[in-house]
Length: 25
Image (cartoon, rainbow, N blue to C red; front, side, top):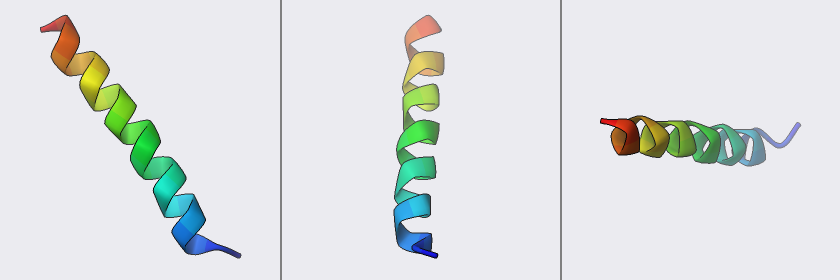
């Protein structure tokens, strides 16, 4: 299991959600 790859994927996914929330406000 490549935990680093999974963390990078989840990190980018969370970052996109955070940007979307900031853009709507």
